[in-house]
Image (cartoon, rainbow, N blue to C red; front, side):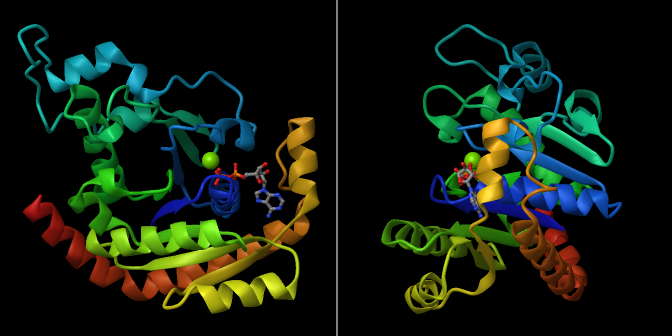
Length: 271
Ligand SMILES: Nc1ncnc2c1ncn2[C@@H]1O[C@H](COP(=O)(O)OP(=O)(O)O)[C@@H](O)[C@H]1O
Ligand SMILES: [Mg+2]
């Protein structure tokens, strides 16, 4: 199962990605979790110890793999570097979890044509299309830079949304873009829900969007953040709702597994 979490800033993408990774890895699944948001803070949320250098800052590695020849007007580099061994060699491992931070590509983000991007894109493609593990991508508010082959391999794009006009608008925008990019299953996940009115508001405003779950506002999440500890044990109402969400994702995924394999094969060929 390959998941990407997107949505407006502050809606809870990182919180959900961390909670899903925690729940699924504890259920003995092997999980690869990627912080792909330039505003990276997933490691803190996870409470993962150890120094994680953003991949984009591994200059020598990127140069070696992309065979970059600096100098001249523009550097020459390979667009399909070998990356199969990167997760095992460079990701942080904790029990069933492999974790990495992508980092920000300076000047143009993931849209620019540069060795860093060729490397990151090849890595994302590898993770989404080739790996057996569950992959969770904590993204920014947009998935345009993933590349078609990669987006087509994503089983679920989860768009985090809270009860508010701006977040609803972002959700509708992301959904529209993602459909154009060939993502098959797109669903909203409502977060920080405090009362039935907020739930009704989202049901009314998100026309044509499947809402896969309603996650409650849980003050224990902020309390844990203040103390600098993971929220799993204290935020019981939130974690229970995420467990239900994980079950729904896995059930729906079982049904589409074969279809997905077929689609991935086709997309890989096309890419
Ligand atoms: N269900 C929730 N209940 C209470 N606080 C939450 C909830 N979800 C997220 N938060 C808090 O909201 C803030 C933004 O969440 P975060 O996951 O960092 O959002 P994003 O990654 O989308 O920017 C954080 O302080 C987080 O602890
Ligand atoms: Mg975040």
